[in-house]
Length: 355
Picture 1 (tube, rainbow, N blue to C red):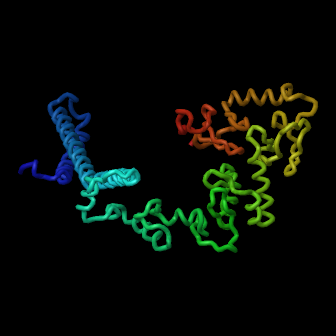
Picture 2: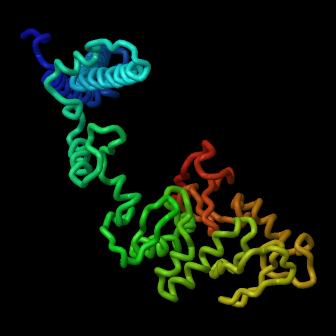
Picture 3: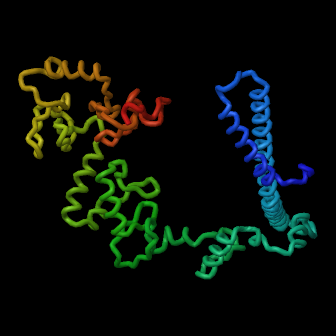
């Protein structure tokens, strides 16, 4: 049988069982004979030959697939090049008419376009053509006119009454918020994002096209309970992380406001714990932050246990189990090993001892 006449996939199906048999025989005879015996050498050589054959077959199949893909897509750049050349020649013709120069009777690219039986849109994906037809039927420019859009979504996003998030159609009376970019957000989507922001404060402030949504308009869509809670969270996120004060009791961690120029101890309204705004630890009447014995012992313990400090709010973090990707109470993400911002270091992601 001529091997050259067999397609690569069939050849791989033939070689793979033979390779499996060789590996199995080699495993059964391992340790029962000398490592440099003729049998072991023959098995190792045969295994290497079959592995190389399978790799060649795999490479050939990949090259064949790539060649087919390039052949199928070859028409695209050719057609686009002709269209682009025709546009350039149209521009030259317009300039010639303006300057009252003689025009070339028929440009080369125009001849190529006339000789083709397909319109330029015939070479575009069906989704784009259908979108262009929808725009044309709705009363806007046709796809052959300059400036026409190939997608009806862009019109709806900026001028139509459609929610940019859920794509639901809105009316003038629908509760909604319009961003600075012109996009509309329905009341349900705004409330859903606000509730999600309570667990992930990086979502605040609510943004559309990287521009904050108007706070006053957002508050009009919320019930009193949700409005009060959102205002508190928004106030917290408006303060830079190093200047936020939290309750020092780990079972509470209530936000106590911005540090500012505070000097007096702050009492947590949730658990009555008193917190020093200067060192963010338990209040220590009669001692300065640097002189308190307990804090000194605490820092010694941090060094002994190799606990890490948040790079944003400087809170102490202890890893009991899990990976080294840490998320602090201030929403900062960092590496537990080196303390740098997450994804800015080359440290391993985890240690089996902590999993």
